[in-house]
Each structure stands twice: as C-alpha cells, then as structure tokens.
Length: 294
Image 1 (cartoon, rainbow, N blue to C red):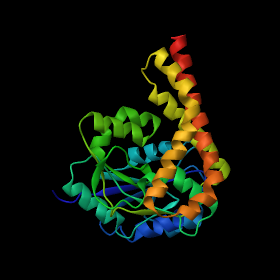
Image 2: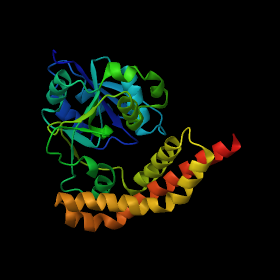
Image 3: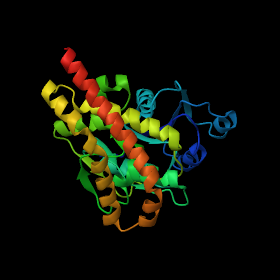
C-alpha cells in the first residue's frame, strides 16, 4: 500500500505555551505535503502566524475542551490520515514519516506511540505526566493495545468518518477506540512514534480539567445501564483514588525510572487524582439521577 498523506491537528487549549517548539518540529517534516492545522482556544500571536505561514489556523471558543478542539480540526482535515497532539508536546524529528509508514503497513484504524517525560520540568509538569501519560511511557515493542493517548495518536480518516456522529461532541478518543474495538479492529502502539512533553497546563487548570473529564467519563461509563448498576458505582466511587494511585505507582515502580521525581511530585499528583475521582463520582451521580428520573 502506498504511504498515505497526513493532516496534523494541534490543539492549543487556553494558551499557546509550547506551540512554537511543536510547529518548529513539524515544519521540518512538511516537504511531503503534510497539512498542519492549529485549533486554538487562546489568541495566537501574529508573529507566530507569520513565522509559520503554511499552517492553517482555526479559532475556537475559550471554554471548548481539548477533544472539542481536535474535533474541529478533524472536520477541517483533508488528508488520508489525521494525527493529533497538543501544543505542549514536541514531536520527534521523524514523527510524520513514522506515521505514514505505519498506516501504510498496518490495517489498524488508530496508531499511537509513547510520550516521553518532561525532562527538566517542574513538579506540576511531572505530576501531570504521571497522572495522564505514564501509561504510555517508553514502550519497547509494537503491540496491540486497548487504548492510546490522544496526545500522540493518528487515525485513518475514513475510519473516523464512519462514526461521524461522535464528532458532533468533539473527538473524545476513548469513545472512538471503543467503537473500533467493538467492531473487531485493533489499536496499535508503535514505539518509534514519539512525542515529548515540554510543559503542562498548570495546577489549577489541570485540576479543573481532571474534574470535568472525570465527570464525562463517569456519565459515559454508565450510559445505558440500569438504576441499580448506577447506584453500585456511586457507592464504590470512594475507592477510585486508591485504585488510581495504586495503578500509577505500580507503573512507576515496574518501570524502574523517575522514582525520585514521583516521590517529589506525589502530593500534587494526589490532588489531581482526587479531582478526577470527584468528577467521576459526580458523573455517576448524574447518570443515577437521569435513570431514576426516567
């Protein structure tokens, strides 16, 4: 199969920190006609737009979440494959070529890769990494997985458009992943498809984001379930922080790296975990209330 063309959608959520470094890396990978689309909920400096003149710029509402930004970019993209990331990540120099080769040889509708940690970053950056990205760290071999990180993922555009109704609410990658898996398709993790985290959203913004994303996760998880199941999930929700912390700690200990950073960032990480758990419980309560009122 010939190598496909690629659109890259970069979400800049509420600030443009890291965006110049991200676009600089992509600029060196564009001789093959790669399309780059920046969807931003923050004003992009004019000098940045002038510097990267071949980039398509899409303005979005300030309150739109990252999946909403990705969704707008997905609808604008015109190439065979759509790769997504955020402004806080710098793709490896061969990121686009790896994506093209991987989609040419693999039938998977979704292909993703590892996220390298924020070397030299502060404790909030590291706590963000452990909370959100440690499950996708430094993979050593190509394999099928149940999930991929949207911040370093690529999709056959036709496969996404086959579920276009989901895009009305943005591109929430886990919902698409579930659709692909339920149809018997595979998600493939390719270790050479790398991005590196450079910064983070800051403490307060990430706490709010974790709560809102946890709430959506809770509502989605119980979609179509009966009232009794909803009540059971609500009753079990106090266990969520312990489960998440144990899962993240296990990954760090098994990896044998970044243990000192993990210990130093642990108090901040616990705050992020509690924010997610509170949101997840709120989502369960939303679902239970909906079912009992039906």
